[in-house]
Image (cartoon, rainbow, N blue to C red; front, side, top):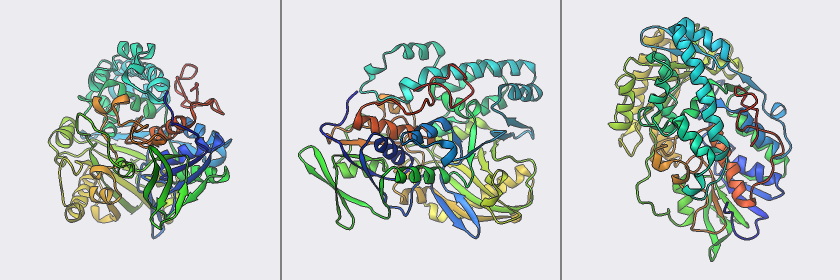
Length: 513
């Protein structure tokens, strides 16, 4: 594995998002002097927040999986997950609502989910679910250590026994076909393929190896920290500060100083100079490449993932029939991906994610009130240039009416607190106005994804969802650790964390790195 050249005792990390915080923790735990420079007023990056009138909104990710990776990140400086970030395991992980009026609680306990599938679709589908669960676990075992949690310098580095296992498991086929080998009920297939939206592809186009995302939530489990997902970056930043990491919030990086091919200092927008031996750039790719002096040449154009419109909503009542996370499927599943990915248009028959965090933590809203977020995938601004500042309010009302019709409430009983659109993501500097960065096409997977060790400087490393291993909370944290490994070389973990799940496949905190 290649690492940065020369000494690397003083490190500057640009960006206090999840990947930057993870890099800072791993580097501090390895004895480096770390300074984190962040343009915002606090940590989080894409895991943002907004507070208004007693509502505490998460404006970034709402689904947290694979807590063992969080535990390993904190363990880099001798901290424990239980002390820093108490988590609640959600049961069910999701409640799926289908257009025919049926619902299914998606549980991560094998026996409970088998019983639920049997009652929902019959004994044959229940047996198929057990086989699918076994396949997902084997897929995860084959992928994690070598393809997700390790740096690879070239495609030839993938020629390992694990690659052969992936081939045998059908990892290079199509996701929907792989799931279809086990499940015939079209509603159930949606539950185990909707995660393709996170990868920015239709299940019919996504490689089956990305079904490991379905392993993360339907087998590994979905969790929620008290106080909201914002508690995750707060916990990481707190642990880093206690470990000696210096944070410079409300400070933007204007430029990098160089001596030959080495970056020697960071210049802030107030013309302050922060010296460094190496730098980790965890900002979005366009900003990272601007600071480095240009993007590397690629034979093909980078393809962004679809974006999203997110409504933050408030209401009264108990909202019986909804869980913490609710999948609201439309009638025509295939048209969702045709619209978003193939045609670059708004969904004609929306499938949506409704999250109600007050189902687990009522303190996120005033007494007697519910806080919810509604996520609707939409095309990114490269695929569909749209004046979202003009269109956003009308589309938000349209979405609310769709959800009201499906769940049976009057739109007038729900207050819209805040709306986020691709225009807002673009103002944050996110490529093509999408919080999901680059799609996980084959040409943007593994060693074909933008590398975390750019060739334009000898002591710079990239981290974040635009580089390896990819998009999502667990992968962002892994990206920070992989960046630290590029600086120091691989070191032994302080804690036995998450890896190939040989001992207890359903436990996301078992196994080894």
